[in-house]
Length: 145
Image (tube, rainbow, N blue to C red; front, side, top):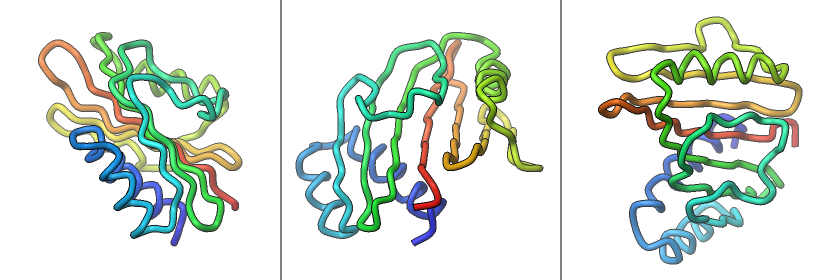
């Protein structure tokens, strides 16, 4: 399974888990993928890469997983009140040495998708405008495993 496909699967599964019974979902994901999944609570997992900057805001959910081949994936959902959250997040990632592949930003009405890469990390941030704030869903995958 490719790193990007694993990251997408893990993000969807981890987000769904934040909305339902965590231990049940954890077991299903682990059985279906062979991954070791830790569905967290309202904090960033302890093993989250410290060199990936996160927007300032309230962490709604933080989860992590390890695939059967050692792939690592993290998913962090944050409520961000900054009006220019997409611009700030892009600047944070660029300041930390991440680069955006051509065409990686996909703005549409009320949503923005940012993709950044650096050596062995891929960061995808999906932002959705909700009232006066943004939800920022970070999926971070360690590649090259």
